[in-house]
Structures are given as structure tokens and as C-alpha cells.
Image (cartoon, rainbow, N blue to C red):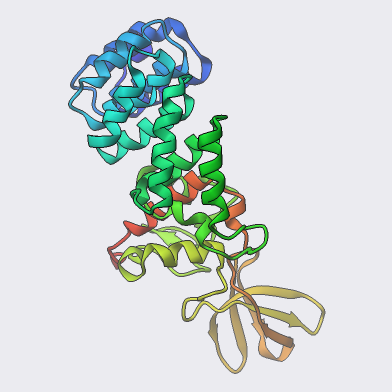
Length: 331
């Protein structure tokens, strides 16, 4: 494929994404070449993932190569694809990765175990669920473990998973409980979290918040939020945004005498006028004399955001926000 072979940087990464989406098996040789090119940077792991997506005939060789790579991202991608190539002793290799691999490799191993058509995988997952019940599993691995276990039909795995789920609040009965989302606190990917923050329409974080000069100003800027609060606070701000509202960002519902209404934060106020920063209407100035009623309302962040995103997206978003530790530079 000439585009893959002759491109670099973002262009090459976009080409790999396109090949993956279109399932172009004819691109297999070019993807394998990128994987083996030690100067190709992050495109190498992306090429390996793409080989898996297109079910390439080169996949077994690619995974074998990836397993021996020095790059952790490549090894993690190879581990995650173990279920697809089903090499001899796959479960044993994944179990070994769980024992001594990096966090990313361990996460990938759990994902692969969830997909591996091998009864031995159930034994490994059951043992890890026992560790989870004994509170002996790293926080960064809990989400992968729970999702892998949920894919299995083995009774031993299902009973242990049920026992764990029964040990914590049901989010359908306790809407604002944080415990059902505890597995989103650690282990996320900040780069993916940045995309969630700026591009996830359902969450619309950047509509009201600024990071790095981008976003709206209805809510507080989050450039240094990771230095101010812990991950539990970040999770609570999503699950139960009314629990703690940042000073100066109280939301008001303002009704005018003509029946028109605005909702937002009070940006500034004098005896004659009030300036409202509204997520719906932008900056609005109204005359004080025209105001019929002003009511302090709930947080501008709507409740239930945890229901419109996957737990993986929540975890990536929390990781991204937790890493924002430097205040915005003033020009």
C-alpha cells in the first residue's frame, strides 16, 4: 500500500486507521513493515492493532514479533491479540504476563483472557476474582478483570462475579453511589481521555470547561485540577455534580418580567445590570430592573453523565484530568 509505505506522522496514523476501518487485508505487508520499522514510533503499535482488526494472515507472525519487542505499547497490543491467534499455551503466557508484566500488559492480558476460547482461561479469571473479593487486585486492573469475567459462561467465574457485584451498591437503586464506578479511578489512558474531554458529544466537557485555552468558561478552568483534588473528587463531580460546586460557579435561573429566562453563572453584576454566562446563550446582559426572579439552581453539570459514557471512557477522562497539574499560563 503506497500511502502506508510513503507516509509519516499523523498522515500515516490516519492511513492505518482507515485501513483498519475498511478491513483492507491487502495492506497486511505494509502494516507488518511498519511494525518492524524501529523508526516508526507509535505507528508500530497502531499497525499491530490494525493487523488484528483486519484479521490479517500475517497476524500470527506479527504477534510473535510483538511479544519480543522492547516497546511496552507493542507488547501490550500483542498480548491483547493472543485470543485471536490462539498460540500454543496462550493461557499460560497470559498468566505469566499477569504475574510480571507492566500495567498495560496486565490489562491486555485480562482482555485477552476474556476472549480466549479455552477453559484454562476460566480458572485464571476465577483465581483473580478470588483476589478481587479479598481486595488484593490493583485498582488499575479491576475494570479489565470485571469486563473479562462478564464475558465468560463458566459457573465458577459467574458465581464469583455475582458475589462481587452483590457486595456493592446497585446504581439503579442508589443513583449517586460512587462505589459501582470505583474501577474507573485508576488505569486510564490520558491521551484517550483528552479525546473524551474535547470530542465526546454526550459528555460535552469542553462546552463548559477550559483546558489549555480550549473550551467554554461556564464552569471552572481545569488546567490544574489534578493538583487541587484527588480522583475520588473527580469521579464524584461526574456522578454527583451537586455534591460540591466550585466557589463562584453557582448556577442561577433568572426569569425576566417579560417571561424570558436564562440559566448560567453570574459573571459580573452592578446595580443596573447582571452579566450571565450561559451554556445555552453565551454571554447575556440583562437590566436589573427587568429581573422578576432569581433562583439559585443545581450545578450546571447535569447528573447522570456516568450513564452516557462507558466505564473505559470515564476512566480515561479521570486519568486525563488527574494529570492536569499546571495552572494556565497568563498572556
